[in-house]
Structure formats: C-alpha cells, structure tokens
Length: 389
Ligand code: MTE
Image 1 (spheres, rainbow, N blue to C red):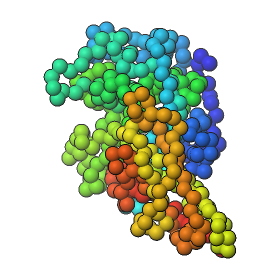
Image 2: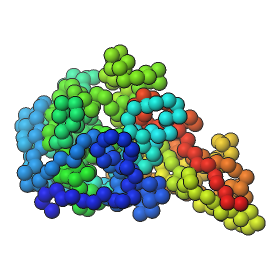
Image 3: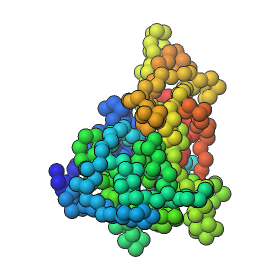
C-alpha cells in the first residue's frame, strides 16, 4: 500500500460514549483471546480528532531545532535507517478511568480496562535519526532538552495539531527503544494508528506516542501544545475543576506530568457479568482465573496475586511474557497471568481481587485515587462472583 486506505474497525471494539471522534477499546473477553499480540483491528484507538489523510510518497517529517543538520525526511529516507522491531504495550493514561467515577465527576473519556493493547512495532530508532541530524545535547548539568513532536491532525481549539514532548535524554538512550514506527504487526500502519509514521515510546503513557507524525523540534522547552499542557497529567485530588487547575497553575507543574505508566493488573476471566457454574459436589474441580498485568517502567512484573477474601490472604499466580527482555533488560510488554483455584474456595467467596508487583516491589493501591483528569487508576481490580446455584 502506498496510500492510506480505509481499514474497517473491528466490530467488537467498544466505542467510548460521548460527542467525540472514534475512540474504542477491545472487550476484556477478546483481549487475551488472540494471545499476546492484539490484532491491529482490535488495538484500542485514542483519537482526539478526525484521522488525517496521508500518502506514503508525499509524507515528510520535518526535524529542526537544536541540531547542526536539520532536515525534512521522506518515508523513503526513514527506510534507509536500520529497522528495529519489538513488542510494545501501549496503555492510555485513562485506562480504567470509568472506575474513578465513584469518587466524583472526572474529566476525560470514561475508559474500561481495555485501553491497553500490544503490537510488534517496527521502524527506525529515533536516536539514530537525531544523531544523523547532529542533535546537540545540553552542556550544563541539570539542563534538559525536549523532543517536541506533533501530528497532522487538525484539532480544536484553533485547528492546532496534537503535540507533546519527551525528554531528549530518553529519546537518545538506546535502552529506551524509542521508534519512528511505520509498521504494526508486520504491516504498514493503519490510518487509525498513525499511518504512515508515528512515535512509539515504550513504557510511557500512550499519549506520548504521537501519530501521523510530521514535525519534530528539539527544544530547551517542553511542548507548548494545548494537548501536552492539558492532558496526561495526574493532579492532586484537591484540584476539583479545570478552571482552578489552569488559573492556579496546577496544570503546568512538571511534577504532575505522566510519562512512565504505573503497575497495573486486571482480571479478564471470569468477566464481571459472567455467571459461574459451580458444582460444589465435585470437590476436585478447579477454575482458571486469568488476566493481564503491566508495568510501564520496563521492569518485569515479578508477582501477581489473587485474593478471594478481600485482601486478607493472597494466592501467587503464574506469569507468562511474550518475549525475552530486550538486550538492555527491558520488559516493554504486558504479561498474562493465571491461577487455578479450588472450586470450594470460590463457592465461599463473593469477590476476586488481583494486584501485581514489579521487580522493584512497586505495587497497586487497594483503593483508587480520584483525580480531575481521571488518569492512572491502578487500584486492586475486583470482579464480583455470580453463581448459578
Ligand atoms: N497522536 C495524534 N496525532 N493524535 C492523537 O489524538 N492520541 C494519543 C496518542 N497519539 C493521539 C496521538 C493518545 S492519548 C494515545 S493513548 C495514543 O495515541 C493511542 O494510540 P492508538 O490509537 O494507536 O492506540
């Protein structure tokens, strides 16, 4: 394919309600069904505006700013750099935001636990391309430069494009595997996921992985895009409305920027609405509880535990990863976990709870932390048990 083609969206994608462009998440029932790699048509979609039209041959990425050789790259130019392919999980900062609504009204889309998907992304390493442009690194200690990226989508307010930035040291760190990706699961990108080229920042919130990428500027300042300044932040719970957040300067405080995602885990089977057929007379029967877990830091999920008594005692689960860590020891993708519980234990329980730990012993809190933008919810995930007896 040389030009973007309409690629049908998978009918199972659950459209997020509200007046906005298409945004959708796969149902939990299908998320694990296809294995570790989410089929491209089922990958969650987060679009702030209409998908821009794009052509492979005519596309350019303009790279400017603090460098000696600024340049406009075509897609053919990008293909001249060595390509790298790796499985990466993208998770939206708003994953599981629907559960936060119990704590009051938060802004932003109301996502279930499916704003997460995993693909093999392929493309050129951003560090190689920036090196080619003679990128300048800050000379003084404590000074940070930023890679400010924007996409071709035209968004409200004022027809601006979607833009955001990541620290330059992250982009240039080979171990972080930041890509200018033009492939997803072995094919060219689809229009929904950024055709012809997007940024992929493993471990960071999906919001930093700019789609339909057409501008990169290396700057001493972070991006001034409306979308960078107003989203992918986690404000303290005392900030109750957007006007206060802006007028009192909460939005612009760097300590509330979300980059690396926190540890999370979710139960996929049994589903919330599923009725379990339990035959207590068959004492040998076991039931398989499964789900996903993810840590955005590149650290391995070292432990997943399930509780059937509201967190008093925990049962250790087996954990499987799709791939070996990268050569730098990074785990950029989710893992799937499973445990088989004795049917008699389930009979006596009313709820299944899961929590995960990464290798630095970061874990999930018991309760959610309400925040205005509805981001980063990673409290223990709970499923009520329904029985047909
Ligand atoms: N890039 C552009 N140009 N426009 C967007 O609306 N959404 C961001 C990011 N990149 C966005 C974008 C957000 S918030 C997320 S979570 C990811 O894209 C989602 O990527 P996906 O739709 O491929 O899952």
